[in-house]
Length: 271
Length: 213
Image (cartoon, rainbow over all chains, first blue to last red; front, side, top):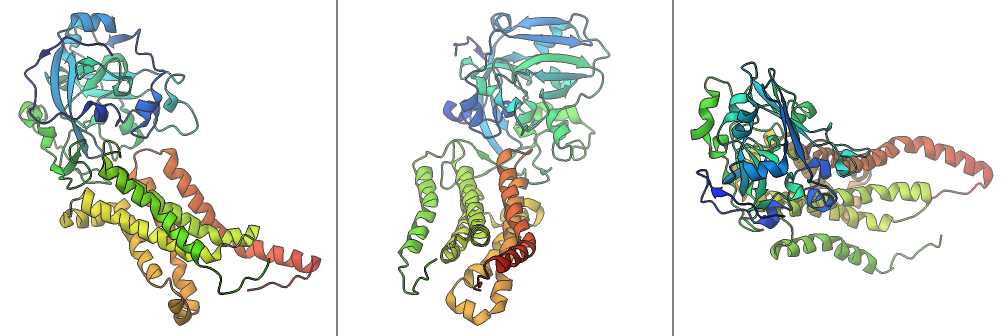
């Protein structure tokens, strides 16, 4: 991995960082297998370079961006975010990235654009989870945000963590990070970003709509149908004994910044 | 097959208990020294559950092995069944003590509200009377009812397999494969009368070999 130069941004937390070893060996990245250890074990042949990201749809200036250019020209910042997985575990990760809004401004979204759709690369020859009889999801992985969520300053495209370019298993070379939503919204290895006028389909919602909503905001009040979301285990913190589960916070603790995006919305219905 | 005497050594059975408990001890050791990965509690919990299911499957394999392949492992069946119960009990203990940190309200809420935990808990409860009556005295005492009671292992095994499938997202291969194995072993219990009747009639006509009970 290469070292990235970034300034420390205004968004940080003084919570203890999850060790890099855990951040890079405990992953959900089903394109490389469904076990948490699979992505680190099976992503060795994945080539995150060269890489281009296409940004198109309802924009005045559709464009393709080279990852090297993005790293060289975008205002990179370090953001230390809590990451809450829908499986009720969490981490604290120092990302390096830039605000998604900065990229979207470059392509000038039209007023008809209401949502942003994202798509992961499709490379069965490099991603063993995309081949074979048992396939966990329909590929390519797709995700989406409302345009105001995408433009929110907390929403970033990460190109690195712990000061270096992203390990393959964490979504190299570029991935989405939306810290107030469950981790599965953070689509990895992005090749396409499209501005659209209707709510786009999202992979986990297609797989099981009852369990995974479009919004997927972290919410201790709305349980996953099969497990509680009231508490979480912080990875790398508790060890084997005396694991204190911590209480999950609404919007993963980012309510002050983002709750206003959802004023008047029933968050139980729009889970 | 040579008829064995009743007073043969019980050493292999005790070795089975010893070997059977090794995965639990090994997992506990790895967890204690921080070698069970990023989420050691979950990993240990998962391993114990998996071994519970494996021992349930081994227990259920004893009869078909004898009936189809004439391999008689019946003297190990009690140990296999009890090992399954011990692993289920350890799996639940780790969930309650290490995972939920003895938050009984959370545990009870989980058992009531989460179908996969309800099913897992039901399987554990079902196995308790089976474990308690896994001794010679109970077999004598209960007679035919002992056999009827111990058929509940079918329900527990099915519950365990469903519990595993429901505990994961999507459809990964592992729980589906375990469920398929359990399904085949349970299907055999349904197919058995037809299979054995056919075999008995062909055997009788061929060799008139007497069958033991």
